[in-house]
Image 1 (cartoon, helix red, strand yellow):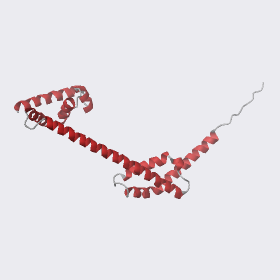
Image 2: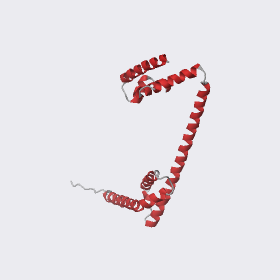
Image 3: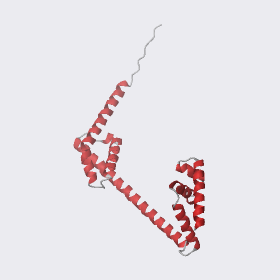
Image 4: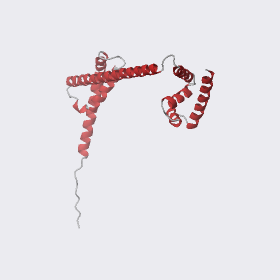
Length: 192
């Protein structure tokens, strides 16, 4: 009996070539970014707020790394490509900033409208408006943890257990804080 040894081709040679290509590409990307980072930062500083420029630059770096296969081999073309990525990243940043500002403005308007409705409902001379002010003032005088606990339970609608979890304390601790806050509020409100 003879046994024939079958030799199957391996991918080891191809795998090492791929790893070498990936390493070379990573080195080229790193070198290109290192060489152009000061110029890119200057470009961004001239086009956005000083505090935002480093963040935008880091986004550019992430995008370049993700799209590293598209990095041109020619140094000048690679530099031009980097500036194109920076321009598009900056445009995205501006759009995001504009959306955030618009959202903030809408929230301010909604809050102002809500406060105006509340103020109208509580006419200045009414007994309920005066009592509401007294309660708000008394709650405002509580120690911070008790004040937050009362606000979470009564104004935000959470149970005492849920409020304890939000504050990161045990439920038993929240119950004792709440009991002290309730006693203090009762004394202060009875005095007025």
